[in-house]
Length: 413
Image 1: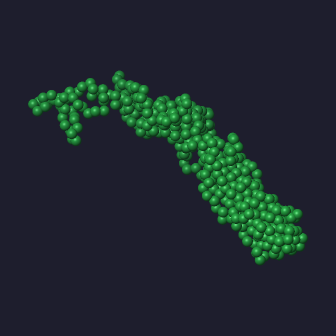
Image 2: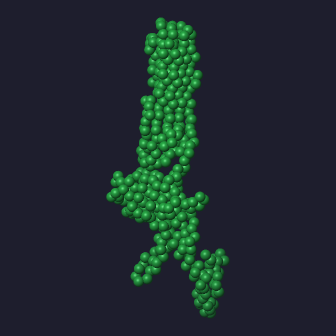
Image 3: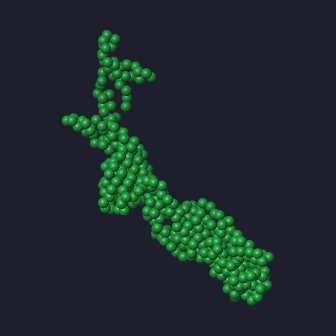
C-alpha cells in the first residue's frame, strides 16, 4: 500500500505525504483523491478480511455487522477469536482460526479441519502459509469420542509421526499450526491437558510378556529397564566354588510412538541355576519394548552371562554383563538411549572370608571362593532386579548355583 501521491498533498512528519483541506488563500485546493489511492485502500482492507475467511458484506439497511468485519478479521488473523459451544460434529469453515471450544457432546462425533492451505489467501486466489493457530479445546466432561480429521489430502504432524486423524480426549486441547509449503499442506499439532496431568506409570517385576496401553493422548514415554541376571554356577565339593552370574545394568530410554499405539513389554527371566552335575548357570533373558504392528524392538537390555561351574577349584564368574541398546526404526517410531546406571543392578555376590560381597552393578560375576558358610547347598536368591545368581559353595558334597534375578521394566508417560 502507498501513501497518497496525487496533487495538492502536504508533507507530514518524516517527509511522508498526507492530505490537505481546501483552505483559501493559503491552500486554495484540497488534495485530489484519485482512483488509484482508493483502490489501494479498498484492496488492502478487503484482502485482510478475506484472508481471515470472512465473506465481504456491507452495513446497509440497518445491518451494522459490516462495520465490524475488519475488527473480526484482525482477531481471526491474530488467533484470539473464540467460538464457545462449538460443535464436535462439524466441518470448520475455510480460514477458521483462534479457539474452537467444545462445551458439550451428545454422541461420538468427527470434527473436520479446514484445508491447511486455506488459512491464508485472498479473492485473487493467492494463498500463503502464515502460521495462524487453530486451537480446539474439549471443555466437556463426557466420555464420547471426538475424532479430528483433516480435509482432502492434508496430514497432521505430531513431531516425527504423521496421521490424517486422531482422538482428542475430554479435558485436552490441541493447537494446530498450518503449513502449506514444501511437500504439501499439513498441520503441526501440539497436544496438552487443560490442567496438568498426573504422571502415569506402570512397572513389571516378574518375567513374561505383557501389554501396555498408553493413554490416548500419549506419543512419548520414558522407559527404565534391565535384563535378567545370569545364573550362578554349581560346585562339585568342598574344595570347589561355583561362580556368580553377571548382572544387567539399568538403562533409561526415551521412546516415541503414534497416539493410541499398543506396546508389548517383555521382562527377561533370570538365568537358570547351575545344577549339581556340576553345570554352569544360564544367561539371563532380554527385557525389551516391542511395537507389535511389525514386531520391531524399540529398546532392549540383554541379560547377564551365567557363572561357570567348579569341579575342584574356584570357578571364574560370568564374564559378560548385560548391555542396553536402542533402535531407530521406520515410520517415526524410535527410541533414544539416555544413559545407564550400572551401580543399581548387578552381578551376584560371592563369598570372601565368609562375608557376602553385595551385588556389583553390571559387572562380570564374582569368582567363587571355597569358604564355609551357614547356607550349605542353599545359595541366596538375589533381591535386586537384574542381579546375577550366587555361585554354589559347600563344605561337603555338591551344591547347585543360584538363579539370577528377573529383569525389570518401568514406563512413565
